[in-house]
Amino acid sequence: MKSVQVEAFLNEILLRFIDFHLEPLVIFDPERYEILYLNEKARDFLGNISDLSALFQEDEYLNFIKLIRDCYTIEEKRVISFKREGNTKGILLFNLYPIAFDNYRTVIFTFCDITEKIKHKEEKRRKNAQLILQDKLKSIDFVTSSISHEINNICNFMINNFRITFQAWNDVLNLIREYEEENGEFIVGGISSSEVDKVIPRLMISLIDGINRISDTIDNFKRYVREGLKSDFSLIFVNDVIRRVVAILNHHIVLYTENFNINLEESLPKIKGNLQKLEQVIINLLINALQSLPDRQRGVYISTGLEGEKVYIEIKDEGMGIPKHIMPYIFEPFFSTKYSTGGSGLGLYLSKSIIEEFGGEIIVNSEENIGTTVKVYLPHESIQYGKF
Ligand SMILES: Nc1ncnc2c1ncn2[C@@H]1O[C@H](COP(=O)(O)OP(=O)(O)OP(=O)(O)O)[C@@H](O)[C@H]1O
Ligand SMILES: [Mg+2]
Image (cartoon, rainbow, N blue to C red):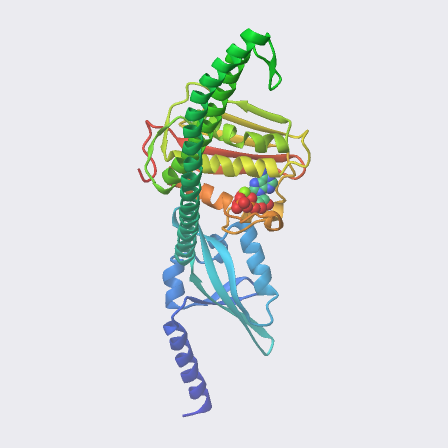
C-alpha cells in the first residue's frame, strides 16, 4: 500500500474506532466553537442539536467554552449541568483531550450523563441518614425506657411512703391538738400549731403532684420516642404542633432571645403527615434560627398561613444569615458549619426529606448579617400529593 493509502486507511480505522467508543464523543474546534465530528453515541444523545449552546444554560455554556478554549492538557472527570428533556437539570461527567498538530488544534470531548447515578447515590445517602436517625431513636428509646423504669420505681416508692407518712400525720395532728389544748398555741417547723392542719396537707399534696408530674413527663417522653419510631400518617393541625414544640423548647428559646414572636393563622386546614416527624422538622428549623442569633436582642418569628393551595410555616430569624457560597450545600447530609459546637449537619437534610415525603417543599432565603427565612409549604388535607 502507498503511504497515502495507509493514511486514509488509518483515518478510516480511527473514525470507526471512535464510533465504537462506548461513550459519546465530540471533536470540537476550540477557536470557532464548532462541532467537527460526533460519534454515534453523541449523535444519539444530542439528537438534532447542532450547536452545543442549546445543551446548556448560558452561563454554564460560557464556562464550558472557556474551559475548552484554554484546554492545553488533559482535563478529566469534570462535571457540568445541562438541560434535560422537560427543562429539568442533569449532570454530565466529561473529559477533555486537547490534540494539536501543525497549526491546528482540536479538543476531543467525551461525556456521560450521570444524573440518574447521582440521584441514586443521593437517595441511598438519604436512606442512610434516616437509618442513622432511627438508630439514634432506638438507642434513646432504650435509654429512656431504662431511666423511666428507674424513675417510676422511685416515684411509686415515694408515693407509698407518703401514704404511710399521711397516716402518721393524722396521728401526729391529734397529739399536736392535745398538746395545744394543754399549753396553748406553739410553733412547729416555723408554722403555728393552729395552722398546721391546713398547711402540712397542702405541702404533702404538692409533693405528690410533683412526683406525679415527674412520672408523667418521663412517660410522655418515652411515648414521644416510641411514636417517632413509627411512620404513620395522620391529619394534623400545624398550629398545634408549633405550640407543642415551643412549649418543649421554651427554656432553650429564652436562652437565645428575648424577642420571640408567634403569629399563627387560626382556621388553617389540616395537613397529612406524621406528627413526630413534623415536630422534628420544626425543632430543627427553630434551633437553627436560634443558633444563628448573635445576641438576645435579635428576634425569631414563627408564623403560619395559607398560600394558594398550601399551608405554610415560616421561621424567620434576625441572625447571621447564610453566606452565599455555602447556600448550595446546606441541604447536603453532614454539611455543617457547627461541628465544633456539636452540629451533625443532618438537620436540614432530614427536614427536607421529611417534608418531601409529605408532598411539600422547603424554601430558604437568607441575607448575610440580616437573617434567614425558612418557609415550609405543605399540601393540605383536601389535596392529594406525596406518598400517602
Ligand atoms: N437559620 C440559619 N441561619 C444561619 N445558618 C443556617 C441556618 N440554618 C442552617 N444554617 C446553615 O446550614 C448548615 C446546615 O444546617 P443543618 O441544620 O443541616 O446542620 P447543623 O445545624 O449544622 O447541625 P444539626 O442540625 O445536625 O445539629 C448549618 O451548619 C449552618 O451553617
Ligand atoms: Mg441544625
